[in-house]
Amino acid sequence: MAILLSDAGRHRHLLPLTFTRPVGALRAGILTQAEGWARRTGMPVGYRTEAYLAERFPGVAANVVREVDAALLPTPGLVDAVLDLEPGRMLVKDGRVLAFCEPPGAEPSTLDWGAPPVFLEAVDFTGEVTALARPWHLFQHCGTAIANDFALLTEARRSQPLSATNTVVGDPTLVFLEEGAKAEAAVFNTTNGPIYLGKGSEVMEGCLVRGPLALGEGAQLKLGAKIYGPCSFGPECRVGGEVNNSVLLGYSNKGHDGFLGNSVLGEWCNLGADTNTSNLKNTYGPVKVWSYAEVGLADSGLTFCGMIMGDHAKAGINTMFNTGTVVGVCANVFGGDFPPKHVPGFSWGGAHGLADHDLDKALETARRVMARRNVALTAADEAILRTIHGGGAGPL
Image 1 (cartoon, rainbow, N blue to C red):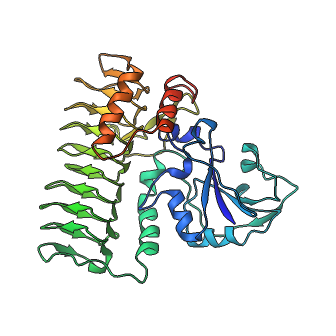
Image 2 (image 1 turned 60 degrees about the vertical axis):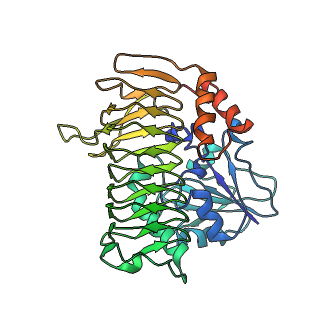
Image 3 (image 1 turned 90 degrees about the horizontal axis):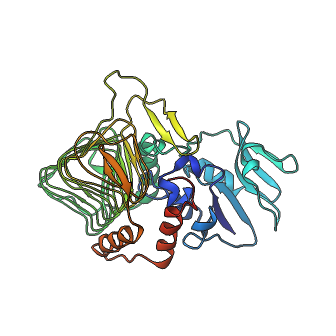
């Protein structure tokens, strides 16, 4: 038996984050979607995604495969309902399919996820579902995802000891340190949710942290960082300054002073010193965000929405990002004044104009940046970036 996480027609709605990964590889809490399903089911997990991503993110074969909408947070009730599905049945809520267990050799089309096929038996799901259907949903649902993952990862386990130099406001049992995690002279407030420090992570002196917080393996909070949860910082991230309700998928740096709020950064991003994002319009009105699926601005319905940044994008020192800015993969943004609200992938420049960012130079930068974390840019990674640059993954 196995779990197959399907993009289920959501891939373009989650760009630029999904230019370089399937929906099932996104992270809103401690774990990625795929990691969450694997841990909760004990089964191998694969992906059904765009063809150009398939080598890097393969599918899975088994005698019984339950195919799940990859955007759905794997809550205990949903996981149990998926595991109970028999071949020839589908799990449905409010007219949309959540999961299929089709007979061998069959597979759902993109259309089937929104219009349940009549030849399969429908099983209604009565529990709550949370879907990461738009990029801003990652920070919107970050607190729920962290609480869900925290309960799973810490059940019947004891935290590594927290140094007495720290101060805990609230329930100290909601601060959990994995092996090798370090924290000194910091203030942890668990009143609004748990704080999870991954293996080998570090919280430096003077940090002020309000949960929920997920700090990934090897990640660091720099001296004096001010973190307002919910926030999730994936593996090897470096985070400083002031951060509010934001997600860094992994291996990204926001290591200096400056404000990042209600935002999502992909992997291998870097924000230069004193980079700031606006997350609130002066009118306090709803924020519009560039949508690749709609090829224009979409109303997020949010009052607070900062920046969405694709993998390998960079910002120079003192860069200012307007409310609801979207920055594409491998963009390099710098200069005074606000850059456009949509900076296409492989762009070079800012408010005073954008030029094309040379592909070979972008790849060389990626190799150099990744090597600093002892990670190689594989041939599959390079092929994905070449496809994106060439337009094979859609408009930048």
